Amino acid sequence: MTNVEVKLNNPYSVVIGSDVLETLGERVRSVTKARKALIVTDSNVSALYLEGAKSSLRSAGFEVFDFVFEAGEKSKTPATYFDIINCLGENGFKRTDAVVALGGGVVGDIAGFAAATYMRGIDVIQVPTTLLAMIDSSVGGKTGVDLPFGKNLLGAFWQPKAVIADISTLETLPEREWKTGIGEGIKYACLVGGRILEILLDGVENNIEEFVQLCVEYKASVVVADEKEGGLRKLLNLGHTVGHAIEKQSDFEIPHGVAVARGVAIMAKAAYACGELGGNERDVILSLLTKYGIELPCESSDMAEGRNMSEAFAMDKKAEGNGDISAVVIRGLGKCEVSKMTIKQFVEYISKV
Ligand code: NAD
Ligand code: GLY
Image 1 (tube, rainbow, N blue to C red):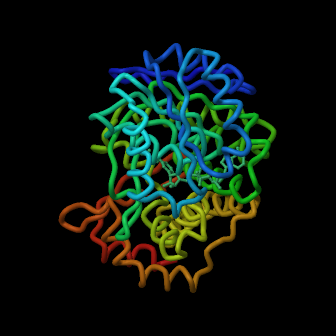
Image 2 (cartoon, rainbow, N blue to C red; image 1 turned 90 degrees about the vertical axis):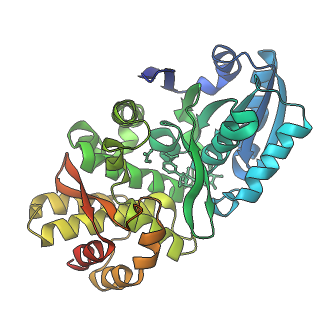
Image 3 (cartoon, protein in one colour; image 1 turned 180 degrees about the vertical axis):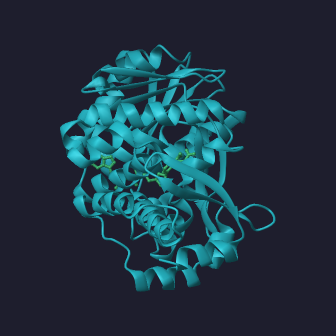
């Protein structure tokens, strides 16, 4: 078992290990004074882990409630968010009570946003059960829901009281969801290089706990340096400007992390085409997508995507008021930089592939 500390003003621990869910109740008890706990989860995760989580929380003295919504990005809406808020209100939750987000990034984002806003903010404990949520979304306090205009447009920064990542839950994760977690992992490999890249090249299944730990350590360091995304944290958006557009254009049929990996591949190809990235490094990045069965974006569709996506780029929350984009460009493995571009320049940049 590993503990990563997120050393913000209100610090919290990310506990990573096998079977840590068995001690969920006492772990939650140690970080909140709540009397009531609402477990928010989805229809897939509830069938696997809800009863165990409830009984562990009850044993630790909580009065436990649950809210289950239909699994998938399509549920990440203001409507689901309001249903959770109503559930908290109808069950008499007070400012001192808590939400437990049990599931992937969709659960964590909506439940976190409900906790951030109910009575101006109550405790949330993130219990990620997907690889993506363990290495990325459960840490750092970004919460929110999608609007018809784009992803994550309604949200808040709200740090959890603790993150409890039980890697044995990954045993039930479907193949498709592994890929989406790996997609965000490829992002970290480009940002950090080193051991994260080595583990991915070797086979993440051989070193899953270390992989989660290293990604969380890196993410925690960035979040501590720039909690509200004034500058450095924008690096974590590598591949996301194109990724969000791909995801939305597919009507969320292409999962988030896979779309991000395709976005990273397009950024790697564009950087190579501009002479900013060596051919070997580009090939290492592309080989990671191939190794994990993530379809590579082909040249012709990249061009089409680039031309058709200006509107999606403009609506992405990463676009600034003047329409500029903070693009994350890859100058080498472990050497990425934020570069301001107009949308036109960005479209030209990615159309070079
Ligand atoms: P998800 O939450 O929809 O989970 C993917 C699927 O896996 C769902 O069908 C879920 O029911 C199922 N599942 C979850 N855990 C399981 C388990 N252990 N066994 C079997 N099935 C399981 O999606 P996700 O990929 O975890 O997260 C994607 C979301 O995260 C997107 O909405 C994205 O915008 C968001 N995100 C947020 C941040 C952030 O910083 N807040 C960062 C990255 C991504
Ligand atoms: N996933 C991007 C961030 O947390 O900033």
